[in-house]
Length: 156
Image 1 (spheres, rainbow, N blue to C red):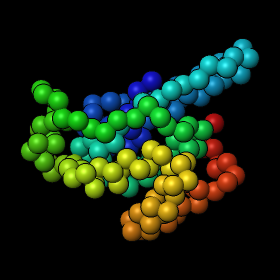
Image 2: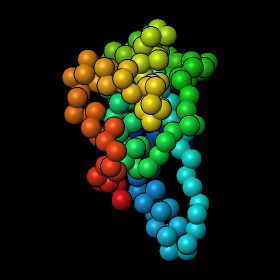
Image 3: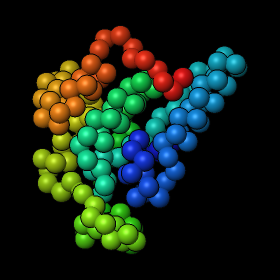
Image 4: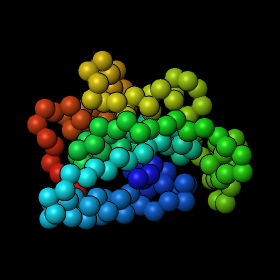
């Protein structure tokens, strides 16, 4: 499965449906698994540093995917590829249809700042992520990401 992101703003630039579509799919998938006593798994694929994606979007992605019981492994950092809207937005800094400015992580530091949220569950990443969330003034996400008990499941 390739939902690729949880931010509707980023998904819109990707020309993909809202993350709510994936949430509904997962609910149906989980229900069928329970009904038929199956042990099938979803392996979602996500991308960081896509044009339009900010570090805060990645922090929210980490919280949402944790709430859905995912520990992400199938991930990628955005790589510009020819003849795509995303590459045009990345290269020019503007959405090609609206001409509105589009933020893109460009430096290695900016890209790593986004990528770290994929791996929030690795103990060595915890301090850096907490420091980043405080810098972003998103301390509200610290407990959601690092509480030992399972977080409230709004999607189940």
